[in-house]
Length: 390
Ligand SMILES: *Cc1c(COP(=O)(O)O)cnc(C)c1O
Image (cartoon, rainbow, N blue to C red; front, side, top):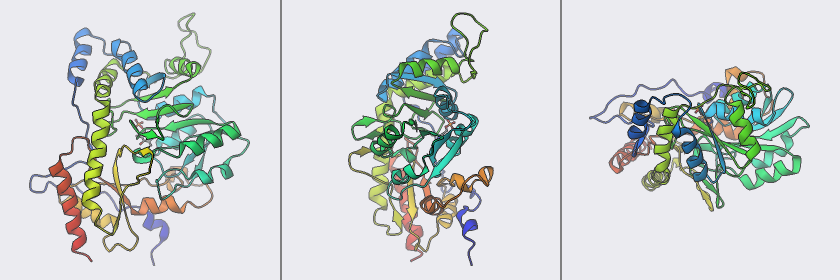
């Protein structure tokens, strides 16, 4: 008999082989513009640290692209989440509601403040937090909801904002995967009290490592600018009234980010084009569930994820191993937070949809720069693997 808990864990990572000259990483950065030119300017002018012309320019340009008034550039997406929570005075004794189907940075950023993450299952339709299960998790300690726009598909922000308003909660969006996504005409980055972006190498906009919090709240933006820089007082240097951090972004990161942001539309729309091509090539494979697409919502397909149906004779891990031997790298979906060894004993309850996603999901090569030929090669290889096992 299969031990259910064991079956949830994916097999060890398969070794990626070069096959007939083909070796496709699951994701790599795309540099289509002024990245090199702007970085060279940092080097030539010696402005290589966390002061310099590119930081404010990147903050304001990026914030505008995502429909927000203010942007606070930081070292990475994880500290963006922590900074937003800290600036909202979330701390020990507080609770923050998050989906269990997410990346580890989401709960960890809550824990860094001393608050406790509280988990909600996701829906199978969108792979996002199930908003019908949020209210039952609200207690008098709940301070915020932190929805995650999974793989670039926006959450049901209408319901989330309504629940937050009713219960007096903050909404801090984990928008690490959703640059350019739109929820019913509103850009992701401008809906909650704050939205946190990551600019890690695989994200739609990258600075190598980097992050930003966007907000329409001037006071909150100012507080985050203060806290990210050790909370140095304006009136006296080396004088600190608040517990700050060093989360400063460098001018070099911002130089790359500004160049990327100049191509914002092209970079996010190409991800969508790639996904549409994958969809058209994979839709005839009955064993596969294609990524979510919802009317009125712009999914930017940060990663092109698919689910294998339970009855499929090819298992998710078999597919991954075969693809790796043909030069195609994939990733499993997230392992839910309630199953993480680092959170052992923290959570009660069952989260069946997150477990289904974890067991059956994987994502395919998703770089912006993928060519049509490469996508056809991936899809063709998948078709071949399924046709041999029916
Ligand atoms: C990438 C990511 C983060 C963390 O961003 P880093 O820049 O790697 O720190 C947080 N949340 C989600 C959902 C992510 O995908």
